Length: 115
Image (tube, rainbow, N blue to C red; front, side, top):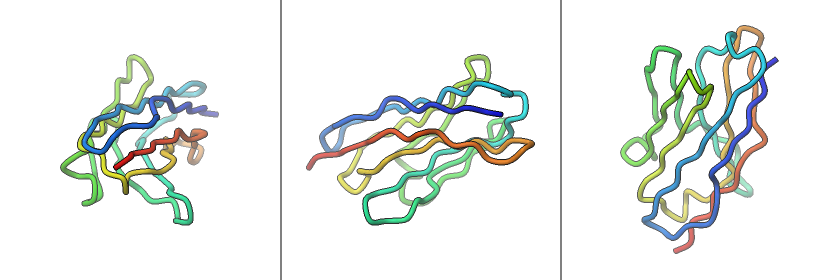
């Protein structure tokens, strides 16, 4: 089993930056791709970005030029660096991992962007 814990969320003004972290534990050797999703109130959870074990990344268009996903395998940590945050980025952000035994999810961290 893989356990994931997000951190780094908070309240920021539009235009500011945040870095989210996702610490993985457990059977980390089973992790393949990892990524970030988010869910705003009243909306469905959406994919934001993913990163493979060899560093290949994929972004959705809405965050492609503002967010950067990365991972440090020596620290078992994945990051989402978010720049130029907008009020529409307000959501609960979730870490996930694709493993050899299925998917794993974190508990989520709240990001609130004020105008």
